[in-house]
Image (cartoon, rainbow, N blue to C red; front, side, top):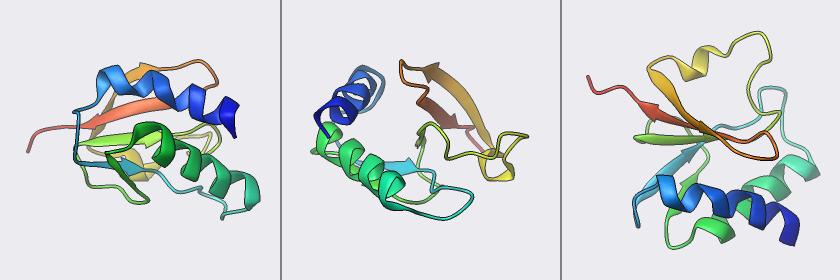
Length: 95
């Protein structure tokens, strides 16, 4: 768990200090590892709320969560950064 939390700490510099950050849920269903990854993101990024949904301005896409061939859930978002461990950060396009 400590390793995962450290991986998500890299996001701190790219995110607002507080507020809701989206988290892309796994495309193929949750399992123990994907749930652990979501919790690690929440703990690492507190006091921000890491919500398991798309819609917020910033969206975390942890490794393995998006469909490899392109994920329609990322429509309207553009990539901001890719971090060690394969995690990515996206930002919603302004309407």
